[in-house]
Each structure stands twice: as C-alpha cells, then as structure tokens.
Image (cartoon, rainbow, N blue to C red):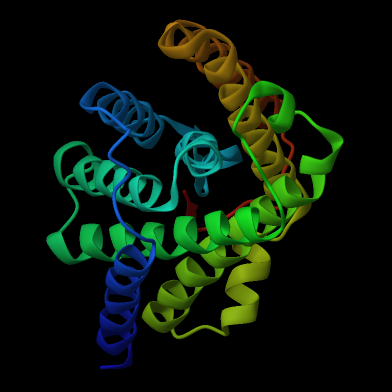
Length: 241
C-alpha cells in the first residue's frame, strides 16, 4: 500500500515537473530534439557494472547532465524522461509501472537540477560562458542536486519494497566512496559532452560516442581487475540514472 502510494506520488510529481518546466522552445528543430533523444537513449542502454555484479551505474547520467545544461528546461525534461521510458519498455523489458516511475523520477530530477543551474546564474549560451569560472558553482550545484534527488527517490522505492531504513539503503547503495567517484566521473563526462557540442555541433556525436566507448571500456576493465584481485569494495545495490 505504501509502495503504491509512493510510486503514484512520484508519478504525479513527475507530471507536475514537466508541466511546470515551461513551454517548448520553438527555436529547437526536429533535428536537435532527435539528436538529444538518441544521445540520452544511448546512455540509457549502456550500463557500468559494479564489482561482483552488485548494482550498476548508468551512462545516461552523463547525457542527462549535458542535456539539462544545454537545453531549455521543458525539452530537457521531456527528452531525458522519454529516453528513459523507451529504454525501459523496449530494451530493459520492464513493467509499465516501473517504466512510468523511472520516467517520472527523471522528470523531477532533471527539472529541479536545471532550475538550480539557471537560478544559480549558470549559462551555456556559448562555449566561453560554459567554461567560465563563474559557471563552476552553478554546474556543481546542479550536479549535486541531480545526484541527491535521483538517489533519494530510488532509495525510497527500494526502502519500501524491502522494508529497510531509507538512510541505510541510500548510504549503502549510493553514498559510498566508490559510487561517488563514479557519479563524479559521469558528471564530468557530461560536461565534456556539452563542451564538444558547443565546439563541433552535431559532429560532436562521433567524438562523444568514441569517448563513451573508451570510458566504459576502461571502467569495465577496472572492475574486472578488482574482481580478479579479490577486492571487495563497498558496492551499490540499486540503480542511479
């Protein structure tokens, strides 16, 4: 009962987040929308396994972060949530209510993180403004906001489903040193994606895919080395996107 109510509340909050993020920007053409949708969809289907198979991180974090920084709020929220919804239903074969929950969770996370970024004075109007020292605080606040909202919403559903203390779930699933480093790297990768896009436009897709491949390959090799050495770092039990 409580779990159903929680899921329904998050879904409703996701709808409100999408509605409250503003109107569609008419200057964004179909090509731009398709580009960012495919970028986020690619991130959704690429997973970073944790040692010993206990949990995973999503490359979608990098794509989501670049999207919320570069696009107006409404298309950023709509594109990231739609990409997650499609990935859940088609690629991960999840039940409709699981996909709906994840999509709504993405709406809330991206909407609030984008709001924090802009309210803090963040700007991505040009490459110069994006890499300006004045953008450090807005980017950092947006990244922290994204992480906290995303992981606490996931922890809530895991806590209710497993009847575990939510703080314990969050601490052991996400807020451990290994997981925090992974999240930091994904946000930095998203920042690099944003820089590449402002520098090369749609041609940056090729560089972004190459960078994603090598980052993921290096990560997988690192995990394999840890497992081969018998290392047992604290690992997540849930998912963050």
